[in-house]
Image (cartoon, rainbow, N blue to C red; front, top):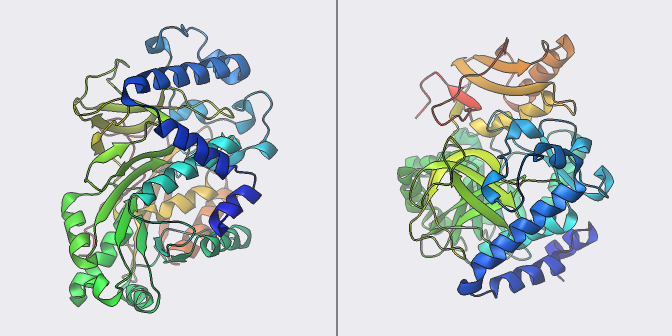
Length: 439
């Protein structure tokens, strides 16, 4: 077993078993696949109705035989202590725990049982394998953030080592920083780029200004995979031109799984192995293929915590060419983050505020929702929904975090709201800039 797989196995995530389960699923023929989906969604529904106290109450008025009677779950339903959400036989010590990024403005902690988490990695490895990428051997240029507290910082650095990743700083996208990034591509035989769309776009713009095609200085580069934010066609064309390799669009959610991945034919293929995806209207009716609505997803394998008919907070549509075995995500609305422009001239990815949520979200989930607006180059307004005002200590913690991740001397305005203004789709934009970004 190679180092990446071994690290998963040693941490209690049975990757070999998960990969065998995935292979068995992928052997199911098209004629039988709809029955596989129906059977798995009924199995996980019955499991949580029998073994999860929270879900028994949540879905008490549903008819297990009638899938359309199953209530739709939202992020706000899950904003409570994690202990309340765990199924019988599971504890915090026996599950994988993480928290959502808060990109929707509604962050929360979640759990997966260890086999479910291993299946997530099996799916990811399978999709990256479409482009001949192997986490055990392919070297990655990683455009993600990283925690700055020592424990989690070194934990991520260890993961980078095991996963053959070179991590670049999305908190600083200045020309100086991007020059250093470019130089790294000259030195290291990097096979692929992976990370936040907006940060990678900024790197592509930098290369355009320098009139450099990345593959000419890094011949080993073969593909770029972007995630976490909307990929616009003109940005994709820019990146493909400046990188000299195909750009692949990934769509996922940490609390669920990899949701869709662009295959080598250019089709945004949705995950039908471990997820059941529905498109619903405002009244929770299933929409026909081709029509746009709310993306609602059921996790077919997570026994630790129910994600059944879970409204992820995005809108989109499935293509009329979709089949049960090969659903095709035709359109996705949302996940767009503005760039942050600071008084020093430094720019950073809007998803920087993912890390600010560490100073806001607590186990008691006192702060339910928040959005951040950049009013001026040096002024940020944090609107939040909470049962009480942020304490002076919490405000100082947020200020300190922003000093660390962005720069000192910024003005922060905190304002508690009864509710936050949403877009027509019902989605919150976590960060928006009201100033003209640097080109």
